[in-house]
Amino acid sequence: MPKHYRPSGKKKEGNAARYVTRSQALKHLQVNTKLFRKLCVYKGIFPREPKKKFRGNHHTYYHLKDVAFIRHDPILEELRAKSTYLKKVTKAKAKKNRELADALLKRQPEIKLDRLVIERYPHFVDAIRDLDDTLTLVHLFAALPATDRMKIEVKRVHNCRKLSHEWQAYIARTHKLRKVFISVKGIYYQAEVEGQKITWLTPHGLQQVLPDDDVVYDVLLTFLEFYETLLAFVNFKLYHSINVKYPPILDSKLEASAAELYALSRYFDANARTSEQVVETQLEESELRLAQLQHQLPSNEPGALMQLVKGPADEIEEDEDTKEYKNLFKNMKFFLSREVPRESLLFVIPAFGGIVSWEGEGAPFQEGDQSITHQIVDRPTQGHIYLSREYVQPQWVFDCINARIILPTEAYLVGRVPPPHLSPFVDNEEEGYVPDYAETIKRLRAAAKNEILPMPGAGVEDLDDPQNLLAEGYISRTEAIEAAERKQKMMTLEKQYHDELKMELQSTQSSSASDMNKQSSGEDMEAREESLPDMQQVANDTANMSKILMSRKKRGLYEAIKKGQERKKAHVDLLKERKEKIDKAKKGKKN
Image (cartoon, rainbow, N blue to C red; front, side, top):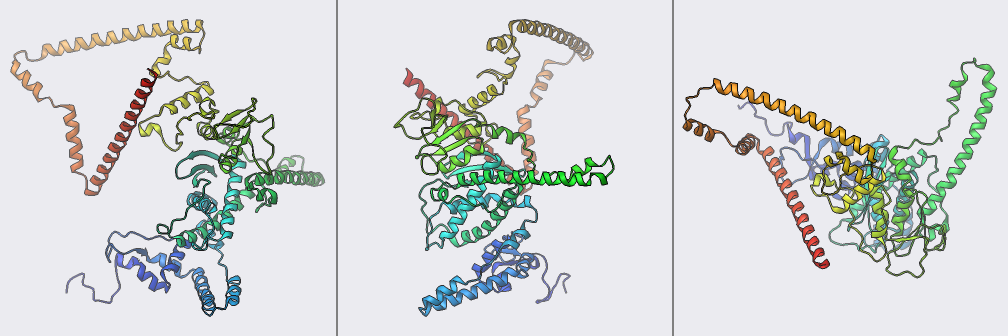
């Protein structure tokens, strides 16, 4: 009998014992595919890729422990009970008993996912770290129309809109927004909450068309059901961290005029005032209690007791980035015309310290207010122009945010083609191509911070020249003369040092040449010169040798990296070529 012989029907080993296919998991749990998919979404279980696929590559594999994890969860019995209940509704509709079907639908059991959220995210930071997809999907469904054909209910759309506005109101109130980028897909935002960077995408405020064939809406709605619960938990925790009651109670008039963000900001202000009054009352009671207990403590103890008086509503310490972004649009008042993306600008401008209003009901101030500094417009002609304010395009706001400075408005005036909208998520140095407008923004930022940068076409070493610094106005004439004398003295000492080193090197070479054999022929010298290897050839041979010694997997990864680098270089060359063509066309028009 062979050593590894195992009779049929015995215990399995290896991957066959650790993994099961999806059909095996369905049979093990006694559920259908739709219910199994919903359970996997709720529990956060995904397919696995075993090293050896014992049933072939055309199967989907799950870990056996994950299947057992689903089997022992109470949510399985709740979903089974709900599916059994829905069969009663289907039966009533088949018998054309509409009243019974409607009554059953109103009384159908609701499944709460609170326990699953706490189970999957035991720490609050874990939930914050996993918010990217949550916010993107919630903002997407907040902009979709409600349709019975796709099973998108009106109640769900309103709930997504409410949750998204609550999140945006918190980000704007705490000034946690960091980057904004407008693309064809939508508007990308990045915020920093609890030390975690969160990036999400919101669709443009246009009429959304729902495709029929490409999207499986049942899966999206299952994810959305869990994400709504998760985002409600996160909003609750964040609101209580800044001493604001949750859920907020909004002004019905502002909600009717589609100004939920402004209504939330007013709710924040009112809640902050009431919390300050509560804190003052608590402090007075604490001081009275402290005076009553003072005689019971030793003379050196009151300082320790005073630490207990400090309430949890003290101001939260802000980091340097938050302080910088908070004052970006300070002392600026914006007015939005009706053709600009109002919802995005109502979120972005207050997040950076600005005051904003719009054209419509519920606005905090009207267009005729003389204290308005900037009006955001996107039409070439205006009915009435106020000389006390600047009329700029919406891109100016987003470019100022990404540049962290107030950019000049000349390039963003109405009717002009604005500069290119650069993505703040791209590292130009790493990509190998720096656009001209990125260089301009870099110089404007350096000028705002009183930093010295080299002029275009000059290196960093040119900054050491006192004449250049004098011409730019950074130093006075006396300082320039003293700096020139110091530089000349240093150059003299450096030249003297190099001359001494050169003399020592020549003396050592002459002594070594005298010791060598003088009878070597010229043919030997030529052969020795020919035998000297080419450094480039040596580098290529070394790279080829190391590539040969790699395993097949590492060699494939190395070739993929090389192809990516070549593709990036070709893209940079194409951008430079396009730039040269545009510059030539501009020069031809001028001539």
